[in-house]
Image 1 (tube, rainbow, N blue to C red):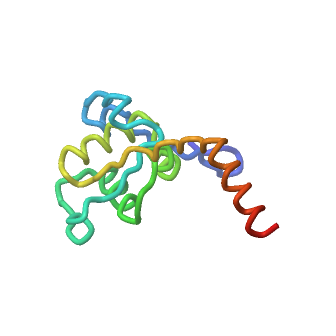
Image 2 (cartoon, rainbow, N blue to C red):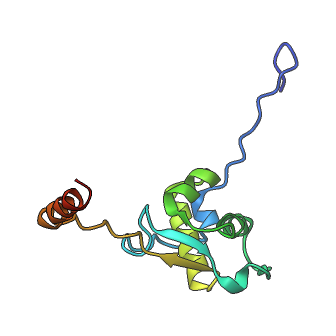
Length: 126
């Protein structure tokens, strides 16, 4: 049905998350946290599996460019975070993706060592 000026509201394309994820559950938070880095496996760069859903294909295409965090992937795809985590876990199980834990926070430098370096620089260069 159209309005007075001929405008028709667009029906949103709504696909329920359980349809996209095929009813799978969330992976452990330790496996795929928001800052876990994900990329396509080496062998997946050239050959594309034909049995993947369109959503899995789009994730694989996105991850083929290099390492992205789970949060970045969710932002780029506009999928809910839970859906992204489930699809990424499925792609990891299939060997299509490789994950890398986030880079650990660097230790703070020892103050005594920094003072020795500073004193040595002052002695050398005045």
